[in-house]
Image (cartoon, rainbow, N blue to C red):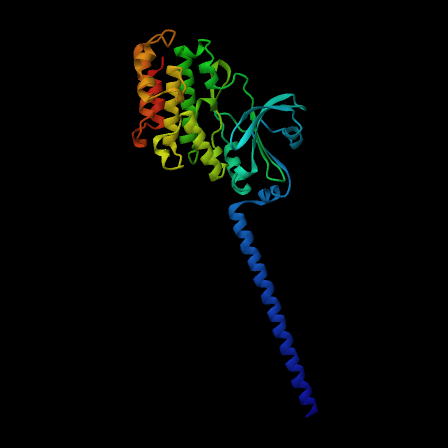
Length: 338
C-alpha cells in the first residue's frame, strides 16, 4: 500500500512537471511566432541594410559616385547656393578627389520614414538619361540627416539663362534645343521606367544647363522623399512662382498632367522671356504677336514659332485631360524641328 502511494505521488509530480514544461514550451513558441511575424512584416517594408542605416551613418553609391565616402561628403568645404522650406543646397569641393558637387541637405523633419526614403533613393539612383541630373550618392546620418550628391553644372539654371540678356536665349536654335531636351528627359521619367516618376516641381530654376545649353532636369522624384507637410510647402512655393496648375487649387495630388502643365509654362518662358509670375493676366503674356515682334533671332520659319507657341498653350490647358501626353509632345517637337 505504501509503495502504491509512492507511485501515485510520483505520477502526480510527473504530471505537474509535464504540464509546466508544456506551458513553458508553448510560451516560447508564441514569443518566437510573434517575433517572426514582426520580422516578416519588417521584411515586407524594408531590408537588413535599411535597418542598419537607422543605427549608424551610411553612404549609398550610384553610377558616377562609386568612390564616394561618408568622410568625403561630411568633410567637404562648401557654400550655400540655394534654400527651400525643406532643405539647403551646397556647392561643395570633395577634397580627396578635387571634384565639385552639389550636396542637397534634406531636413529630418521634412522627410518620410527612413525605410520609405531608402527605397525611393534606390529607384532615383538608377535613373540615367542625357537630359536628367543623376543622383551619384546618398548619405544618411545617425540622427536622420540626409544628403543627396549630384554633379555640379557651372552654367547655372534655365531661369538665369533666360533673363541674363545676352541674346543667346533668344536664338531659335537654342530655344528649340532646350525645349526638346526637357521633353526627352520628361519622357524618360513618364514612360521609360516600370512606373512613371512624377517630377512634381518642374520649373525653369530646376532645369540646369550643360555644354551647348543642353538642358538637364533636376529635382525629379523629391516628392517620394518628403512628408505631406513639406510637399504642401513645395506646392505653395510653386504657386508663388507661377507654376501651380488649376486643378491643384483643391488638392495636393501631382500627376503626369501637372508636369505637362509646368512644361508648357517653361515653353512660354522660353518664347516670351518673361517669368510666369510677371503676368497681370494670362492674355498679356500668352500673346503670339509679342513673341513674333523681334523676340526670336536666327533663321526660323514663323510657322515653327507659332507651332511651339500653340503646343505650349495646349500643355497649359486648364483641364488636365485636354493636355497632350509627353509622347505626343516629343512627336510634335520632332515635326517642328529642322
